[in-house]
Each structure stands twice: as structure tokens, then as C-alpha cells.
Image 1 (cartoon, helix red, strand yellow):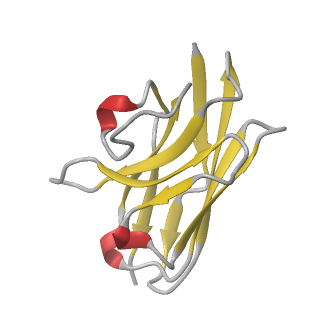
Image 2 (cartoon, one colour; image 1 turned 180 degrees about the horizontal axis):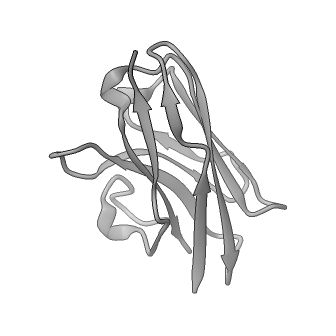
Length: 125
């Protein structure tokens, strides 16, 4: 089993930045993908971004392209989400996810095996 612990959420003004971190522990493997989903109040869970073990395979939703950057430190089993130019519509609970192998469709919540507890991101003036 794999455990995921997120950190870095908080309150930020529009246009500001935050960096989320997610540390994985347990039976992680080098074929794994990690990523982020988010869920706003009253909305369905939404794919944000994902990355492979080496960091050279990334996917990203159109809604965050050019503003969010995902990265991974495999030595630390940690994935990061750098969020810049934040907008009020980015307000949501952000969840870290893990899968031992690549699965399609990567943007579906159903293909991810492990989920973190979530961290709140609020963008408001």
C-alpha cells in the first residue's frame, strides 16, 4: 500500500502563488505516476496534472496550462505542484494521487489507486 501526505495549501490573493507538496511512502515503484486532482464545492473532481517517475512524461488540464507546473523528486518520493497566477476559480480541495503504472484515461479518477487526504486552496481577496 502507498500513503500520500499533502501540504502547502492555504489562502492566497488572486494573482498569487502557492506550491503544494505530496510525499509518498510505502510500496512505491519506479513505473509509477503521481498527480493532482481538485474538487470545488458542488463540482465533480477534476484532473489537474500528472507526471511519471523520471519527470519527462507530464499531462496537464487546459484550465491550468501555462500557470501550474508539476515536478517530481523521485529520490524523495515527492511530487510538487507550483501554482502561479491563481484565480478564484482555482479554489478547491487539491488531492494527490498515485498509480503504480500508466493507465488510460489518465484524467479519470477511476484509474488512480491511492489518494491523499486533500489540502484546501482558497483564492480570494
